[in-house]
Image (spheres, rainbow, N blue to C red):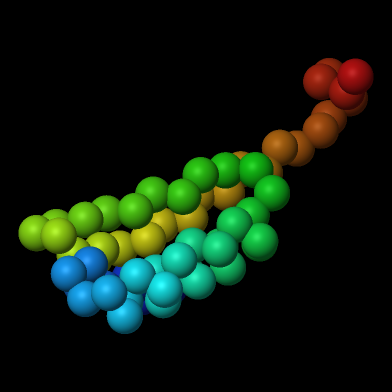
Amino acid sequence: MDKPIKFDLSKPENHNEIAIQILSILQDIRFGSIEIVVHDGRVVQIDKHEKYRIKTGHNKQ
């Protein structure tokens, strides 16, 4: 698992870096979610949760 990314939202120069990280994750994810954790006005973690569906003979459509 990747090391959590920490950014201080009170610094405008960090807004662009946060957006770049989120966009990078969005480009790589096909199914799933992104969770952004904020503590005291700082983005302290960005988590990516991917879903992988396995097709078997029982659930093919």
